[in-house]
Image 1 (cartoon, helix red, strand yellow):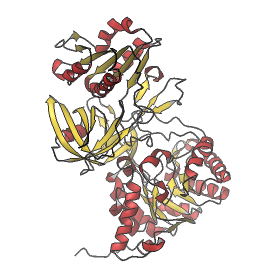
Image 2 (image 1 turned 180 degrees about the vertical axis):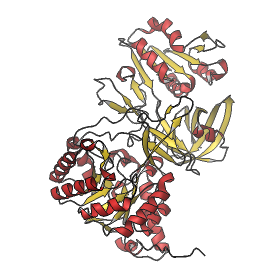
Image 3 (image 1 turned 120 degrees about the horizontal axis):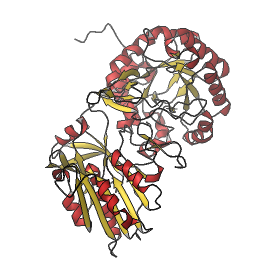
Image 4 (image 1 turned 60 degrees about the horizontal axis):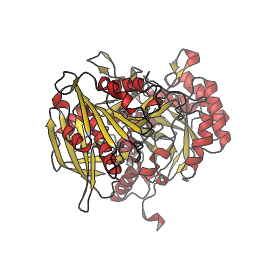
Length: 267
Length: 312
C-alpha cells in the first residue's frame, strides 16, 4: 500500500529516521518483522528494500510506522532524499517474529550498528510485556564510533542498562560488542535469560561461537538481499545446520528473518 | 451479467485459459506464497516454479543482485524435485480451479522424459512448459535451447510421452531465436514462450569480486523488455503456434505491447516481486483498454501490429 512520509530526518551522519503514515488496514508488526519499501515513481532502483520495524503506532487518528536506516547504497540514498508528503510503497509486515517470553528474568539485547532498529522495537515490546514485574532488560550496543550509536537515548529509556562498545573507543568499551558481551556471558547462563541479537553477519557468527553448546535461548535477526519478501524468489536463502528442521536452506524473508542461533550454518 | 466485459479467453496450444495473463515460472513459487496478496483464481494460469527429477539445493548466496531497471538472479533452480512437487505442491495449487502449468527442466534428455511422464501420470497439471535454457551435462554443458538439434530432440521426446499441451520456453542467449522457435515447432511444440532471462553479470569494484556467487546470472525486469518484445515480434511472424510473451512486463501497457505484436498470452515475472498483485492489476488494465477501444474480444487485438504505420 501507499504510505505518506510524515518525517524523514537525518539524526546523525548517514542515519535517518523515517516515519510513514499508513492506512488503518496495515497490520501491526510483531517485533522482528520487516516491511518492504520502495519509491512508487521509480523503476530504478526496481526492488523494494527490506527494513526491520523500529516503531509502530496505532491511534484513533492514524497508523504510522517508523524506520531507522543507514544509507548504504542507491536505494537508501534515494530514500533519504524523499521529503514529507512524498509517497512510498510499504508492503508487509513480513517474516517470522521473535519469540517472546513474558516470564523471562534477564532479557539481553545485543546489537551492532543499524541492527539497533529492530532490537529497539523488540525491547519496547518487552518493556510492556514485563511491566508488571522487574525483569531486567540489558542491551549491548556496538558501533564503529560514538556518533554511530544512533538511537541510544531511546534504548536507555527502555532498558535498565545499556553497555556500549566502539571500534575507536570513543564511547564505552574499545572493541567489538561480542568481546564485551563475552566478559559478562556467565551472568546469563540461566534458563530465565533470553538473548536476542541483530547486527552484521560477522557479529552474529561470533555470537554463535560464544553461544555454542549453551542451552540459553538465543534468537537472531538476519539480513539478506531480497527481491520478493514473501518466499517466492528464493533469493535470500541461508544455509541451515542439519537438524534445523526446515530443510537444508531457509528463506530469510519467510522462514526468518528471526532464527534460533543454533540453526544457522555459518559456512 | 457475466459477459458484461470484453472476451478475454485465449487458446495457447490447446489449453484454453480465461485470460492471457500467467505467472512466470520461478517468480510465483508454488502459488501458496502469493495467496495472501491477490485473488489467484483470477489468473489465466499459474506456471509453477521449475521442477527437476531430483531435488536441487540451488546455488550459494548471494543469489540476486539489483541492476539498473532490473535484477540478476542465479538461484540455481532450487526445487524439491518432481515427486515432492506432485505430492505436496500440486494439491494446494489444484484447489483454486486455475489451470496449472508445470515447468520442467533437466540435465539430460532422460531427465526431461522422466519428469514429463511423472507429471502426465499425476493428472494434476494442465500443461507443461519445458525450460530448455539449462545445460546438457551429457553434451559438455551446451545449453539445450541454444542447439537446434538438442532443442528438437527434447521437444520430440516430451511430445511423444504426453498428451498435455507442451510449451517450449526459449532462451534469448542465442544468435537466432527464430531458428530455435521454428525447430521446436517442427518437433511438435504446441506453443513457445519467450524470453527466459538474458545472461549477465555485475562486479563489486571495491573487492573486485562478482556480486553473485555464481558469477553470472539471468537478467530480468524492465531492462530486458525492449529485447523481449523484439524477439516475440520476430518469432510470432515466423511460427504458426501460439507465442507467449515474457520479459519485463510491469503493467498493462507493457502486456498490451506484447499482445499487439503477436503474443497470444503473457507471463508476469519480476513484477510480482515489487507488486504482489501485479498480475491482477494487469488483467484489469487490459480489460479497461479493450473497453476503451471498443474491442469485444481480445483475439481481435492480438497480432494487429501495423509495422508500416506512421507515428504522425
